[in-house]
Image (cartoon, rainbow, N blue to C red):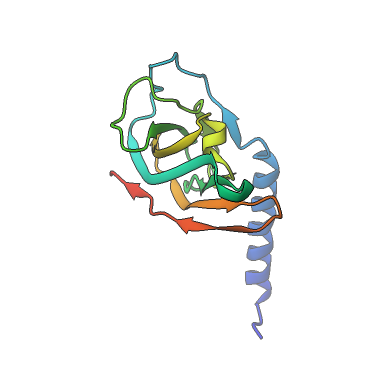
Length: 165
């Protein structure tokens, strides 16, 4: 059992209160940014990340494949927001300026995102590789492609996220 001094307990209480108030103030932590014109890019190309495989597609026996993407802005509270966009490039093809992209989003410091079907948001149907561009560091934690069967079972594979920095 861990025993805390009164000073340490007060400091932890203050930290928890500040995190809760920050959490409440970042309820809209993931906000759409201005969308670029088709074929144009948002000014978010300082950092780059790649996911080699993603899907939004039907499969055998009424299954449906989706790709989960999770991450966040690791900047400390009071730090900079990060704006990012996600592009879907068809599997086996090089990137093209007209490839589908999700509208850019801005993420507050310490805020996270959870996109259970990222290609459904882009929107893109089929298999693709993902390019993520941001104007600041992102902490991309998970990318997994999974089969969401009608009976609720899920199975799939995790894929690495490559950082180009």
